[in-house]
Image (tube, rainbow, N blue to C red):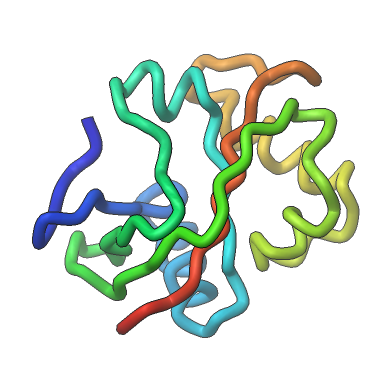
Length: 132
């Protein structure tokens, strides 16, 4: 189960520490407008429903405090091999190519014990900053 804060599901980006601080800062600056999750790992294993358009999420910072409120503007289920460059760019993390995006995400999900292949379902969530 994902955490809840102020009646909203929480969104904690990346792993605690430098990665989370960086991703939170990118979101607050407006550079990061999307995030990717694995359907099996981040939703089914956590018994969580997908986000839905219009849903508000509490973005937490590295200390666990609410850094901002986000609104979901689009959710798509996409095979890993079909994630688009437009989505990778919207993640705002400076990926140089789709191959770079794929390599970074495989590396991120590997320690979770989930091997990602081309057919793995990625949940592509686009959001907008509502308040900070």
